[in-house]
Image (cartoon, rainbow, N blue to C red):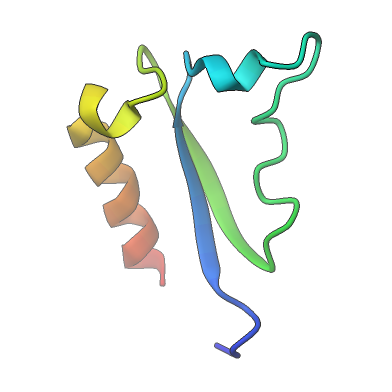
Length: 70
């Protein structure tokens, strides 16, 4: 892995109000657009802005999968 490429992932709650802050735009539609080594995204159902507190097991599962990949 070079210094410029860092593996990244996106984990968010499907109900996060940030997602729809701009009317008519899904702000989560292309989370890896600015990443050089994007490994994917996980939207956790029935969770909102505080996804790590609302669904800790699902967040840990997504993090484990990401870390297992790198």
